[in-house]
Length: 128
Length: 225
Image 1 (spheres, rainbow over the protein chains, first blue to last red):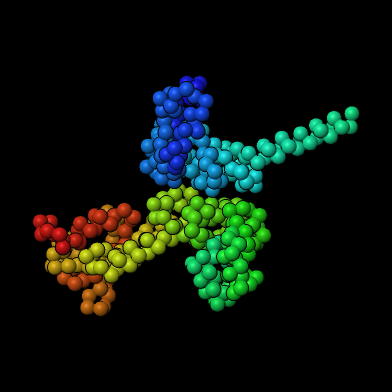
Image 2 (image 1 turned 90 degrees about the horizontal axis):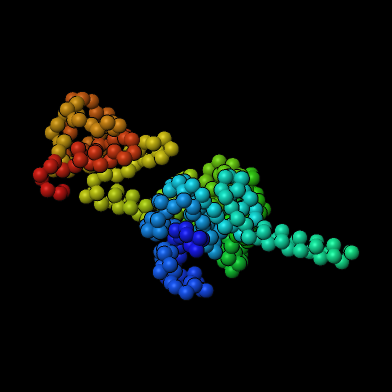
């Protein structure tokens, strides 16, 4: 999204995490205009430093469902970010929070659907 | 009453013990296998193994018929979300959440997870009560009702001693309800004259403490008490 000209700010507890963002890039993440803040999503100071108050979209995609659900709600309710998306691995909770009006992405659900259709396609090809 | 306690640490285990002694029906949910096996030796069928962040674990523990859910794990996010789904999805009437890091307290409030209890807060309350310089003691906070009752001890340098209650300009949204003098309490009227050593009780809208502190605390210019 940075490549498309959007302003992108990343928040991660690992100070070295930006090196992952830089794989395949010829310059550093911050040299390319990206923002990077060290901290956790539950720290108000870190969220502010990352610029949550002026964000048009907020994506909560840490490796913990609980953290994502909590910070997505913080972004939604406290900072009123217009677009908030949360990654939730647990399909049951992803579904329930979706019903509560949260935009959720459930990679587990997506993988299940893809695997299922791959199996069906395979079976269909077999039958021919 | 049917109570679900999430987290079988020191807090959860002892809580469960107390509740069982009082003849409540209790299920403790613990996600650490080893801890579960330890606690299970005592609590037997009253403890179940699983991650209470997962809805099916809560359902298996019978959350639909729970009267009270208490989340006391060492993880604030877990406690917050368990209580949030307990209340909003399963319509459990009463929840109590433990706050491990007091800085997370605003997040609990934001998610509507109330009441929440933090050990730091409790110690602070105790400190207010035990250490007189603090001056102001919270007796009761009714968050939902937006009301609190506080107690203040009038020291030698208080700006209101020797004055009639009727002459005090009480801040808006506050009311003096009682005076404790020499171990006896009474309801003051406009002619009551406040004395050094009086403990006064006031009911107030939240956020008015500072105004009251200013009025009842050390008179301006006398230095800090």
